[in-house]
Amino acid sequence: IGVLDVVVFCGLESLGILAILGNISLILVLLRNKYLNRASFILMLSLATADVLHGIVTTTFFFPPVILKFSPMPEIGIRLYNIVDWTAWAVTLTHMSAICLDRLVAIMLYSRYNQLVTVPRAQKFCIFVWLFFFTVNTIFFAFNFCCLTQPLREHNYYTFGYLNYDTPQFNIYTVYYTPVEILTICILSVSNPITLVQLYRRHKRKVALRMQGSFKSSVAGGILTTHRSQWQRASTMLLEMSMKMGSRSISTDVRDMAARRANRQQQRILVQISVVALIFFAYMTAYYISYYVDYLQSTATMIFNSFFYSTTHMINPVIYFSLNKEMREQLIDVLKCYYRTITCRPKPPLPSRSNTHREQTIDRAHPSCTTYSETMPFFSSSSVSNYK
Image (cartoon, rainbow, N blue to C red):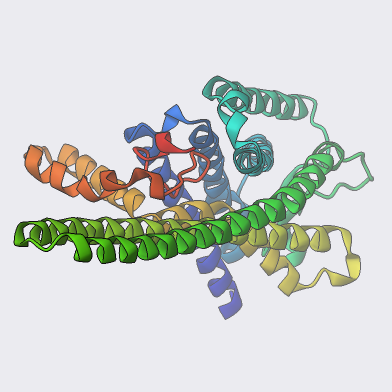
């Protein structure tokens, strides 16, 4: 066992464990906080479930041979793991495409979004994908079709690939899954740039409208002040004017705060879409190079393939929790709740009604200043209903 073996094993296992824990945390947050009344979050829940299965497969089957230097899994175990892994991989591909199309429809056809994308349709899509691909992979298992995936000894177990046979056989998995992979790449390549461009245009349009509105309000305020200074000299009228100007200043501050928050949310959306797409494309590039380009099948390529594969399945919860303050708070609440349940501690008292009302005053002051989208998990569940 060399130093490289230890480093690769620790890195891959850490990514796998992070994928399991992160996606389980995301699932708990989605279930506990009633996000599932939106179609987008149903897709996210199904994708997180598939990523949990991927994490289990990688940590217990694909990468332990890196340090063991042999594969302890019997053939029946390899075949069962292949059912789980290929089903989860099909769910990952189809749901990544569905989420990208969901965002594209929400931006391009937002007036018809609620009619086109509904919760029952999302539920039926998820159930169909899981049942269909699980059935297909079970049939592959029953008829012992070629070729199963397992850790590859010829590459020091740094990656996994198709099981080699003494006589060449027809590989049903490449024929069946390669079109799905290519279709996913095409959908992401087309939908993500369009989504990013539309988000950028919307952001610039909002900035221009806000600047124009600020200019008009300042001009109108100056004219109003001039007329009142000419015709209203009494101290009571001056007092009334000062009160109105004070309330106008507060309203402007609230609008500016909401606008800045909307800009930050738009930036988070851009980061999430870009990072997930780049990591997926990096993995697919390393995947096809490592399996189909013979002269580039080096150790570094195999290691990159494994790391990008593991990163693909852990990146979503990392991005959601790191960029969304509300989801972080909900995750902390979930962890505290389960900790109290395990330790049999009583629940803390609920906050008073006056404190809750005071915390929500700013958000309710100007709800029209921020645009929310149910397709973006960075927005709060309470604010999603105000979208367009």
